[in-house]
Image (cartoon, rainbow, N blue to C red; front, side):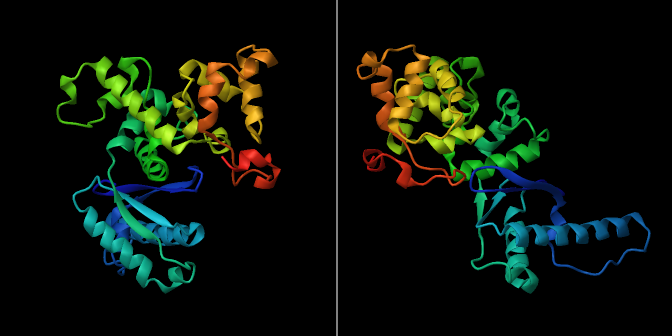
Length: 292
């Protein structure tokens, strides 16, 4: 959101941007007749604002978002929030499309902005189709809301000078800490959080913006994670499938699989569930894998 325009992205539950547009922020103001002289520049602007208002209402009724996020980037963001609430709650032609009204939240853009302006991340498969910084910020805000760990992990890099997390303002005194020490602390935190939450392997397999999580599995790292990700062409339906993938990458014999430290360390933290986009169900899982 800027003073005059805003990038609006509709992101589905999988973190995929299904639609993205740019609107005049004044389209959130109450509708009023065009008062400027017909054919004048001001009249054309007012007509465009009306068009944007109707387009926004059409998109809201079409995609029916459960949550609307407003990036805190403009001084009048609270006024914009109130205006949007009025559009949703007072437009009868819009209300009929919602069983439950969407919740409207304000979101901090500190990390999404770092993602949007990071050269390496902006050229990655997750963002390379969006050339405009404001579009990437809008999409990143939604993905950060859905999974903060996955979005932050994209900034991490083993080389300190390319580690985007080191420039995110996390603490007033962080510049006083040596880069090596700060990088180790951030890496350890990411590993600990992933160990607590686990890795939904089938969800990560189909979501480019979540692939950075794999490198924080215990026993793996950037190099092994890239090899592991390349082999995830099909759905993972058992822990044995994970063992087979890693055994192939590490050129291990069947006898060595049970004692390999990489496999022993990573396996307990992998969650195997069908992704909503897959055509199989939990009934296809081995009975013991359903309990983990």
